[in-house]
Image (cartoon, rainbow, N blue to C red; front, side, top):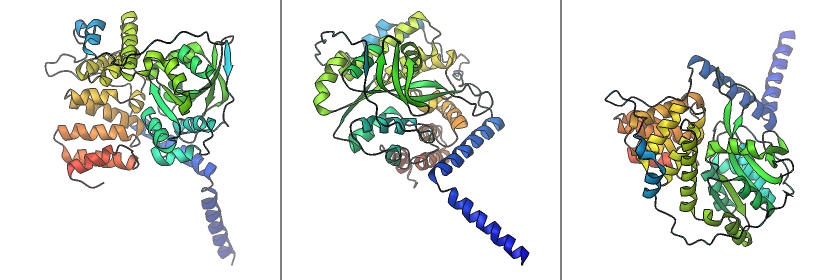
Length: 416
């Protein structure tokens, strides 16, 4: 009888534990613990180290040092088509010394969820009644997905909050951010961030992060940021913001009401035109390289702006230089310009190398790296390996709005 009672007690504990584990907060905590343990184990058993430098060329010479003349500002900009729109520069208006927009209710991010959580706060500023879960369902259905990029956020707004206007630009500056806020329009930026703990041995503790800026104060030289990981109304200095922002080509996302379009046009000026905006960002990156030729971030941003103009050979050379001079370990988890550049220049071994590295530190939770690994394997003659990678990419995000993995599988004549 005593043993029977013990069995029933143990069964009851198992049932209770199962029910408790389904409470969202508990479930997320358990899942986060599993993700941390898995990342540490993977990193300990198979250390990733730093981002790999470019592979040697067939002649034995590094592919990463182009002739200096191929990357001069004059030659690069001469090959980029200038903006065709006629834009009248706005008359400069002095900005107030401070501005503060009443922020929406603060929302703490779920696992790897700074993008959806920050976008959720941004949309609620305009009266939207959803939350980050609503966004996750569309662009981040798997919690372990380490990245939501600005294009996916832009897609969500256009399709699911179409009563609002949205755009994103690169090469931003402090004055533009302040001008938008002063006009009553919050701004979302993507930046580099310092982690509070290691996720694997010798982790450089850097990651991408989104912030919603809702105010500024010149007396403190700081923005007010809604930080989904830390707190509401976090003060971040202008200087630190620009340093961190540089990791992501100083990209900014602007959401506004239709009647505010002319205001945004005036504030952005020539940057309203996407081609002009990219050309200016390209010039900024080149100027930073001229100041410091060992600036890996500037080389990376140069490559990203060249990819926009489909200048893939020059972009690949710029990315080579960026990798030589050093980048954070997680950089290629968030930004995909190098994959495009190496693919379009036929450097499939290089493409495979960086894809494998990203997957080594991310696990099979980066649908972008899996997709590019598949295309590298396909062009290197490994069709079965390509299909496996495409399938993994598909299941990492079955709701990819572009359907890239599904297209790849259809191209290969394979099912998901």
